[in-house]
Image (cartoon, rainbow, N blue to C red; front, side):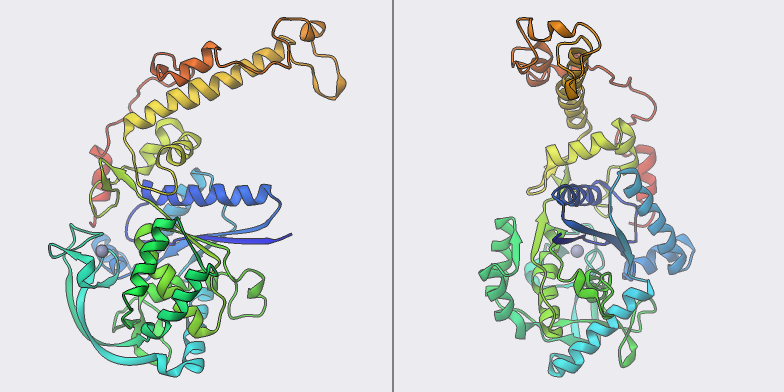
Length: 437
Ligand SMILES: [Zn+2]
């Protein structure tokens, strides 16, 4: 049975899950379920990124320790993924000993194999706490991070450990061009290729005296930079460096958002090459769930409460809507109106009526029973009527038409009446999200 190891990005622990997180997890979950149906030996990993600087701020704002804070956030995220019926096999948190062991082992492996590729230098730059990343001029617009226009960039100057990323440009470029490392969809592959062709700068991989993080091997004054730390989760979850991790590694698929392809398609492959490890087979970078054309995120203040979205029509309806309307390639809008329309037209009318008609037809005896048994009643008529069992439902059927003609809102079998749970976006719940943004 071929193994299929897939991962999602691990989520920052500084705020509640929103629809953007949900799209990624639901999409990956469908891929995992598809591969299980194919008979593959699926291992599906999700998890939490818990060492970010924003956790320190969020915990201080909430008056608790960082550990207490991330424990609470992990429980919240896990609860949401349970409600959305994500079928992950493993859940990794970057504060776990197994992960810390993996990070230290990977760094030591690079120190041994390629000692010149790790060096100490002074760094000065503008830091985005939303991305947890130093920003290059190309990533800044109007003085702000392109991904986080509402956040202020922080000037930082300190001595750090660096990784000689520039030394791996040609190798990573060759892997992506040859298809050894696939990047999809094509628009993302082209972006990554342009980035590599423009050349790479060496990257800082540690922070000075940050009290929340993994101590840098051989230098307790520094902690491992959160992105370098977080990327390794995909490997540490396989049991690396203990023998047997190759049963899962390399990953067959990393599912990530389009905003973090530089980390997954450039830095991560370079780290693995430096350590002499195999590269993942495929990185799939999905688009964003947008709210009126803007990326939905906590820091942008536009996050629709995931709770409200699940409560609207249930977990299955939300799963359907996100993949049907937003999809896994481009950006797509979420609005309550579109959600309600899809629910009524597709789920209640088209599919709902199809199931209803199929059951009615079966009960009326127009479909022969399976296993050669006689249908419960009227069985003899099954082949007699003008529309016997071997005729499929025709497009002219009124129930099917109702869904396709978009007139679904008038006939919504089973649709719930608007209730107090159907509050407009934001209002009372949004105060939860503004806690620490
Ligand atoms: Zn940013």
